[in-house]
Amino acid sequence: MKHSEPGGSTNAIEVEDLRKTYRGGVEALRGLSFEVRSGEIFALLGPNGAGKSTTVRILTTLASATGGSARVAGLDVASDAREVRRRIGYIAQGSGGDPLITGRENLQLQGQIFRLPPKRLRQRIDELLALFQLEDAAARMVETYSGGMRRRLDVAMGLIHQPEVLFLDEPTTGLDPKSRSVMWKEVERLAREGLTILLTTHYLEEADHLAQRLAIIDHGSVVVAGSPDELKGGLRGDLVSIELRDRDRTDEARATIEAVDGVSRVLRTGVELYAQVDQGTSAVPAVVGALEKAGLEVAQISLSRPSLDDVYLTATGQVFQQGGASASSDDL
Amino acid sequence: MDFFKDTWYLYIRLVRLTRRMPVFLLLSIMQPVLWMLLFGQLFAAVITIPGFEADSYIQFIAPGIAIMTALFSAAYSGMGLLRDIEGGVLDRLLATPVSRGAIVASRVLLASSQVVLQAGVILVMAFFLGARPHGGVLGLLLLLLAAALLAAAFASTSCGLALLTRRQELVIAAMNFMVLPMTFLSSMIMSQNLMPAWIRTMARVNPVNWAVIAARQGFEGQNLTELATSLALLSGFTLVCAIFAVQAFHRYQRAM
Image: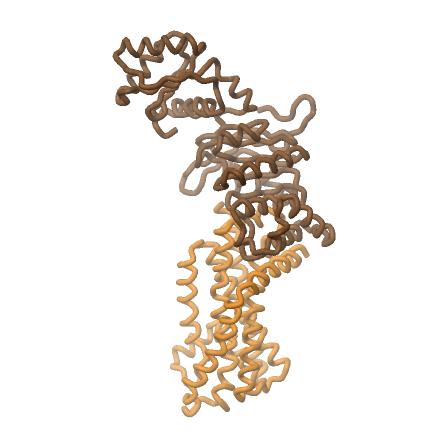
């Protein structure tokens, strides 16, 4: 694993071979490794149950790892937990604000815990309330807030002590599109101010839009990591998606397509087949021809440049094959 | 130092959210008042049984009801903690450097202060019903201390159970299972002289009875040795409960 860059830029988070086995034997993390550079937005992308939240819980000292090591802001999360907690902001998946007190009171308590001096705390609260457009709601019980307002308060609470590293666990899950774009703008602005942000998401679009780098994780380990462009570039050529009229023969078609010249790989999700090809324009007629020759009628065929969706698809598809599970498994 | 500061900050939060539930406040004040009236009327005749040895039943029962309040109010302290767990408030706090002990201590402090308030209401009412505190101001303060200690013990137990089980139903069932038997195995509403021998024996090792004896001796100001012994035993019990709560907290964190 690569630690700091030769140029001297440091890593805000370093995770090495992290393992977590819950009592009862469930392996949530199976040797997870990645690093987050100072000042970047890094996304952990993966399906539900992939191990994203477990990773964040270990990095924020809420859970302990069963193996491996993790450092946040240069400090070991296990042996230096108390100091780590001083330097991080954590915004959990659910709201962590107390619904039965006001927004301002929530911020006040959070600031008191971090021992902000009273005068400084008052300024900071006003600053954050203005920043997150919560001034009018400050004196109202959080119970009465909308989902988007609650989320903004959560982020404000996580920022009260000006942390070095911010953890955002599924920041936009359950938000309407408008609140989501507001949240994205906030996250981008925070990153411009030099804050390191680790966010988890199961929205590809979110990772693509926000993250400078990301890691796709599945079944508790990193499948692939890099910048969105690097990852897309890593997929050679184009992607052809095919749907058959006779869906029962999809597996048969898969074998047929795999034999076509210029096709490097074929994956199946449900009734669709995805062929990774060197040259889209020449591959499409070749694929259609081969299928017709085998007596398989094509219902739909399309050609696309690789998107992050495709990275995700090929990345997690690979895992299924390596894990020995059927490659034509539907549960992608 | 951090522990005390954090306990105070978290306590203020709990006081704030309690204050925002005026119906809850009203009910928790009305409840002991109702008990005083009901028990005072229902059992008024027991005083005529030979061997009961009290001037009036109100005089006898006032300190007992104060302790009963402590029991019933504090037993469900863990419910609030469960709400914090479910709402993500506890996780949010645990990701900060807040003193871990302060999280439970603030709830115990809330239960104790609520009980002191309720016991105060009971004592004022008892005075108007004719009861007289022969133990003076110091005696009354010791009565309130006994109520606060018992409340702290039960709040700790309740929070500990909440952390261990993380199920409302289990906490309620477990606390209900303890509260009534411990009430009736004490001299809270019935004179020790009139108890069957086996209950008298059980009462001797019942922390609720220690609290009742301490409260009653404080109110009557008669037997100071008994007062001191009961308070000492009660303090020990409260300490054990607090240790249980702290252990439960560590276990909760390890399970994560």
